[in-house]
Each structure stands twice: as structure tokens, then as C-alpha cells.
Image (cartoon, rainbow, N blue to C red; front, side):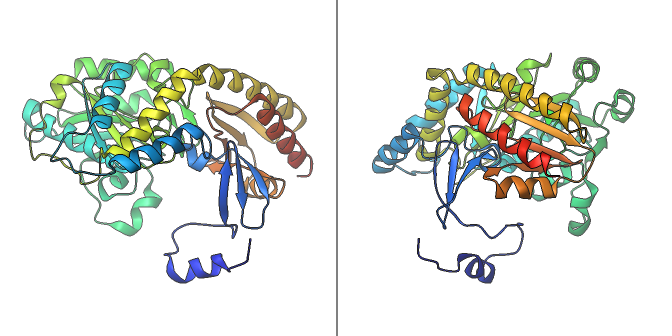
Length: 396
């Protein structure tokens, strides 16, 4: 491809909010990305858990073309059939009663926060609007979801922060129970903290959440933005835990690369939103929801949940072999194809060397490298990733 100095042109016109390495990605196929210089990479980032069917999936491309030729947008003044079909599928899969479609995970979490606070005021009293979240959580970058995110470093430049959030240490039962008050309307939690280091809820903490939900009249909101839609080997990660969510939030893998978010709520909870209480211009448009329908249909038709669980076993077993050779790996954690490799050293050099060797991986907090391949990644591609990763570790 002819060189156009794209990075320099981008730096001249785009805000400097992302750490880019200078490569320009121009095409993708399956589990692989190709840059402007023609080099191909095995993509175990998947757009940060977004490209659930890989790149340029034939079914998804066909949906984009067909729905684009039929109807892209008509506004929420009218019904559209793909959004109704998608809502039917999501409610059936989750057991929750109603859906609101948005455009991103932050918007989905924002809507969940609004619904929880409105419920708190109407059911528990005018002051019952506080939401408890976890330290090291990540829920988005809007002012509300940033305030919900339990990371002080992300708050410091945007004060005054939205009030009404209390933070507790992940899996600290005593701290959680001490933080719940009559003013608490909800607990917002990721069952696996992706950005926070691939940290998983303990069974005891799950039980504590259940007790609070039942005894203190507190809603449970589960942020499934990164973990949902097959990423952990089930449609929703909460299915693998003894939890009964009142609200779940979705985005990332739901559209397979096309922007879409959603939050689902139990029927009686959803009635607290009436006409005019919440809205969106683009959310639930026919093109986005048609893409999400194709993602869900493909997961089902191609038995991708089974593939996720098989590839998880293969990947973890391979990483355990590498761990035995490289004691700098302190632990391997996560579920499905959300895998974290914890190191006892900084991981930037490892990630950069993987990139140089043709494997794309991403970090998380606490010296963790995340593997996030597409849900349809093959056995051969997992083996290739392990070979590259092992070779890189041997040079450290």
C-alpha cells in the first residue's frame, strides 16, 4: 500500500487520548489483522473483546449489506423489527424481562444507574440513591460511569465527581456489608474485572451479595460489557455464579464490531421507567440490532460456546506449561476466552515483543496480560499464539 504518513496525519487532527504504536491496520480476516505495510498479526485483542466473530465475518458482512440496503435508521418514534427480535432473544437467554438499547457499554451502565436510582427513590425513599461499586472496577468514561469506576487515578482530573457512589475492595465481605446503608439502592459489579486485572468473584462474596440483595432490599447490577455474549463460555458470565441479577449491562461483543449497548432489567423493575424518563437517538437502530442478531444466531448455530470452552482448556494447559518454564508467571486466571496471565514484573516489553513477533495481546492492571481471541478462534490459532508467546518469554 502507498505510504501516506497516516500516523503523522492522525496526530495532527485527532486528540491525544490513546496510546497508539504507529501501526495502521487496514484489513482483517478471521483471527488476523493486516497493517498498511502488509504485515499480518494474530489478533488476540479482538478490538478489546469486541470482534466476537473475528474480522470480516461473512455472515456479519452480509447482514451489514442487506440491512444497510433496507433500513439503517428511523428513530425510536417507530418500532423496527430487528430490535424487537434482538430483545426477544436477549430476554429469553437472560430470563430478564425488558431491554433498553444504547450505543456503548458506558451508555448501558449510565442507563442502569438511572433506573436503579429512580427505583430507589420510588421504593425505598428519596435518599436511597447510593450505589456501591468495587475498587479497580471499570464501568465507562461518562461522568456518571467514571464516578462509578473505583479508580481514584481516573477521577482526579474531572472533579467535582458525581456523588452517590461508595467503593469497597473486591471480594472483601466485611467491607461490603459495612458499606451498605438504608440509602443504598444497588450494588454494581463485574463478576470478572477485565480492565482491573482479570479478578474473579469469590464464592463467599457472591453469597454476601445474595444476602444483601434479599435482606437489605438492594438491587444487583452486573456489568457484563466485557464478559457477556459468550466471552466466558456462557452467554452471560453471571450464569456461572449463584447470582440473580436485577439488571445486566451489555456491549462490546454484542455487535461483533458494530457499536451497540444494552441493559436488561426484571419486569417489575423496568416499570419504573416511563415515557420520557430515558432516551437515545441512535440506540436500537435497525443496522446495529440486525448485526447483534447475527452475532447471537451465529454463536448458537456454530456452537461457539463449546468452542470457547474447548479453546479455554487448550489455552490454559499451554500457558501452564509455559508457567513451569518461566516462574515470572505468577498465576493464570479468568474464564472462557477472557484469560489473564499475571506476572511478577512489568509486562510492557513482553507485549511489545509479542507485537513484533506477530501476536497482538493487551495488558490489564497489576502486571497482567490479557488474551481475548475471537469466540471462533481455532485450535491451530491457539497453538500458534502459544508458540509465539513462549518464544517471546524465552527472550526476556
